Amino acid sequence: MRKCFLYFIVSAILLSACGKTAAPIPPTVTISPAPTIVPTQAVALPTVTPVCISSQPTQADVDRALSYTGDAFSAPEWERSYAATETAVAVTWQNASLSALVYLEARIKPCGYEEPDLNKEFSGDNWKSLFANYESYQPIAECRSDAGLRLYQFKAQTQGSEYAINYWAQSDTNTRVVATMIVFPLAEQSLLGTYSAQLFPNLPNCS
Image (cartoon, helix red, strand yellow):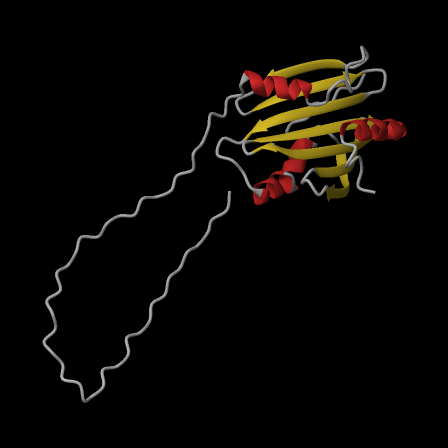
């Protein structure tokens, strides 16, 4: 039985203003004495602070994570475990007979998030962290559905075995993102396709 331990993981707007240069006074105009200008006290404008929520998972977060994949991995050969961390609920299903693994994270974004945040979260050094327990990994493809579901496909190797990996990221709510990873031995890639189509029929692969 092979076990893999996987770890997993907003924009500034600049405002500017410009003013008009006063037109010159025509020379035929009689200039009156300048009025006395009484300085006024500057009023500080209020700053906008984002409304944030608690990062601690609620029972609803646990229930959402446990029910997200439906009955796809309910068979006895899939052994399930889960844990709530400070900012997420993580669920793992392991199938010893197939050397397969499914890992799901329901991540909490206390102050919300935007597309650039997800672009950064699912890229670069974060992939290195995710595959830290593998000897090597190779990105194969990435794509998105019209609804914003993201799919990243990889091949990875550890302990002399090669694996095919599908990794989806979905914006679940304004403060929740769900990441789902399915790992199967390369020889069982057809089964990976079967489960992928069951879970995400609109984006089972990037082909």
